[in-house]
Length: 166
Image 1 (spheres, rainbow, N blue to C red):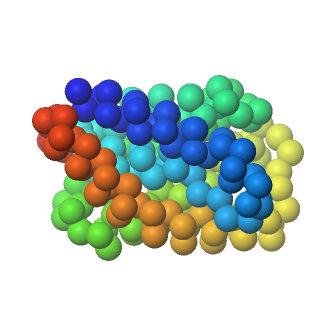
Image 2: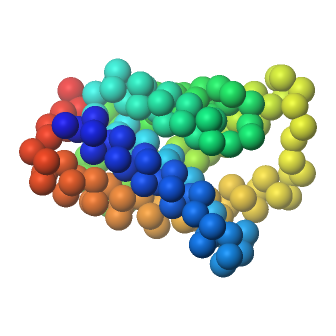
């Protein structure tokens, strides 16, 4: 049941991210909602499930984008591993911890993507654009992560799904 709630959250995040309504507002503020959902999974689920969820989330994002296939899958898997490994001895119910792990996830995801783009000699973006995107995504993810975690915890309780971290 927990997997169904996760799958519904990822589909909803992908739909919101690709909504034409967001493009009508302007290209300014963007947040990777699938990354925030994956942060929740990494904080509250077991390691194996978090890694699989990170890979599936990234693969879904790869399928819908024009990026190199597997780029998001690898970066989301590595991010899920990093967040889960660093959150093992932390009280993850804390809003501050959720916000900090969301910012960590944005940093790990972006650095992984930039390293892979460099290794495979793919076109990279200008440094000022990368930094402005990083700052925007970090701030927005820190603000949105506690809300997403709360919403997904409520959905898990309603569905009577266990979310053991192990």
